[in-house]
Image (cartoon, rainbow, N blue to C red):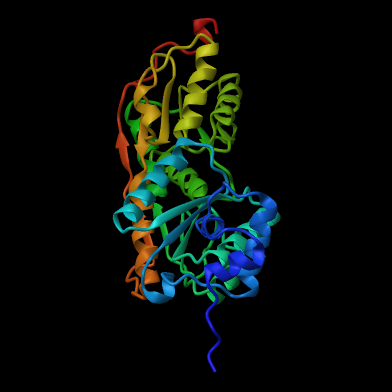
Length: 344
């Protein structure tokens, strides 16, 4: 005999709460006390509750978008792309931040079990094997935007042409006449960071130049790390005449380091970023950067995960969207006098 399907009303009665309260938990709402949420989620798991309009009925409800960190305009652009596609398809978007902590990931998985999801989009992360196995068991499809390392072979990934973007940015500075070009890399564990650095090195090599390791610093894509790296590069005995930072926020940090030293951008230092965030167009001067199509990446990830939720086959599991150089006013030919001669 088939097991009778449990209802929201039955869960509410067992928990001693109202049906709307159970609904709020199922929809990932925050206006439920932690104790009540934990009780309801436990009952949902114990009774293996699945909403009628879950993925098993072929009708999409929710897409999960999971970040390690959620504190930059870069993340907001991705959210905008995912939300545009999800909203158009009548699908809700649940945004989570796990901070790379095991406890946070465990809690997120518990929430996911309690409210059926049509798919999960992870951002700049690897999916740990236990998480991958659990999502596979739950029949929840997964897509990764900018995987940290090598994603599992059955997980589609969405990225950008980071290597060619890094090379294009460096080629631009070389074409202006710069030869001492500093570089501020992103986190070493991320594939996109390593690809941008490799593109920088490739451009120098093609120009007959050897990368000077003293001109390479590492940041974390945030403004503060760009400022610190910029200070170190500009305080070298023979500082660079141009700096390529592998995120716009770090590039703006470099500009601040130059400003505090009384240096003018681009007259005394050219600066180029990567991302083309809205802030880059309103910087003073407007920032030359490599446009990474963040909103488009989010939109493609959403379309891909929704296709997977409908049982469709993905023809191209590895997609890289094209980057584009956006030349503005923060880059110019190097000054004829050195920084040392300016009395810095």
